[in-house]
Image (cartoon, rainbow, N blue to C red; front, side, top):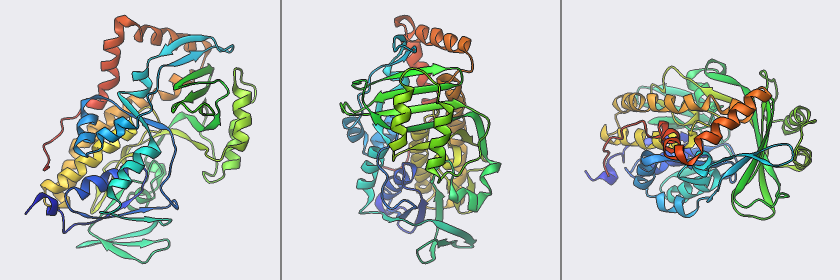
Amino acid sequence: MTNTHRLGHLNVLISGASVAGPALALNLARYGARVTVVEKAPALRGGGFAVDFRGHVHRTVLTSMGIWDEVHARQTHMGAQSVVDADGAPRVDLPAEMMSGDVEIFRGELAQIMYERTRDEAEYVFGDSITALTETPDGVEVAFERGAPRRFDLVVGADGLHSNTRRLAFGDESRYLRFFDHYVAGFEVPNHLGLNRTGRLYSEPGRCVGISNYDGDPDRAGALLVFRSGELTYDRRDVAAQKRILAERFADMGWETPLVLKALEQADDLYFDAIAQIHVDRLTKGRVALLGDAGYGATMGGMGTGVAIVGSYVLAGELALAGGDHRTAFAEYESRIRDFAKGCQKISGNAGPFFAPPTERRIRSRDRMYRLLSSRLLAGFFKKLTEKAATDIELRDYPA
């Protein structure tokens, strides 16, 4: 049996077409599996935050997937970013490798690369979602919101922090989501500071506003808002309500905040969510597995995209080694990815306090620490520090 037919008998449904889903589709397609990707959005989602890769593990996986060169060619080339005071004067420069890793690319462009590599081998169904999962001795009966019911050998939830697949197979989100006392928002703003592949961050106690330009476009930039808060009750589909929350929280903030809030009024690409993590007891249940943010998500700072890419590589590789035996493959996937994912989640717990320290004293302390870490004396140590979690896994030799 050739490698390309190793999983030719396996029929897999993947829920989600952001990053983890197309990554798994690409890795499974290498072994000949029949893959269907269902995505609730009407089309592949563009834009989004820039995501980064760092260290030899990420590079090895992207190279094995055949997309390293294209990712490298389409990287942002983002430079250093500066923490500034209310007048815009720099307080500390944050080196590019801290914020952008070895190579950085927009999430939407990464998804597009993997989609283009798989759309002829995998079936993509947009504008639909799973409504029910019923496991049988030889598969999973899946009901959809729009499409007719179908049977699959395996189902993989790659549908993000608020995974619908996880809810259906593992239980309500409240059992697994840990809130980290902060919220984050992002949207496009005019590039009124004339930034060119650089950014500015301004912090007041419990709040942060950032403006960055990742692509050299003289007209456009991206805004990042982070604020400390107790848990809020809001409808994730009500964008107007989310804009009101942000306008109230940042109403009296200094620096460029008034212009950012003015742009928010017209923004049609708002991302708003809690800074949170997902902790499940198990990543697999019967014939259902969780991948990426659905199983071990962290809103920001935990290298979630890198973990998702590595997870897709491991899951597909274990299925290939096991000849499609999901019991063996799922157990190996779980044991190999769990500690790696947890290590990356640990560092994400500091994201909120880094951007929005709770007091002026903490803001000054943060600036002093990063001024020291980014100095020439500690530059090598700092790079190793940022790569430690990203490289803390031993990759197995999977079939070519």
